[in-house]
Length: 192
Image (cartoon, rainbow, N blue to C red; front, side):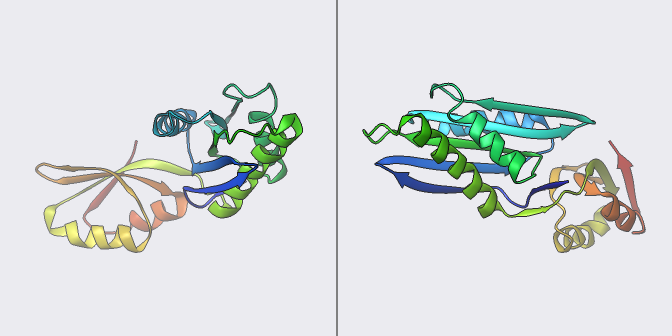
């Protein structure tokens, strides 16, 4: 399975209409819905905030396309077709459009929303998807700088930090990262 590397955005203009494509890798449909809501709030004044997401979560595929007021099938559907054509999963795209005064017609809308999705995927970069699981890392304060350096060096994002008698981090790990990190002494690794 393929997905995208990074969260990013693209923008271009077509007959005075401004298109902005936001894209983000995701693990759950909830993440997708939160991202869509965030972009809609950011661009409340936009004419349209059309969206599409495709995610495999717990063996179930979730797909949702939204035209957000554009004529039916002219925004979300063509963006979804680009995801299928490019064979990418576990991502969300929001295409924000500011109307420039010149109507694009149904064909023009389809072309430009598909273009928005394609450019966003290309800008984000495609990579092979690695399944990750949530883990809690529990360790003493004397291991703090070692763990921070290890996580940074291995590009492991810390989702949550908790400092009490011991330090606990919530992280996402691939199977390879899990096998590597469980070998570190004095660190307890617990699957959530």
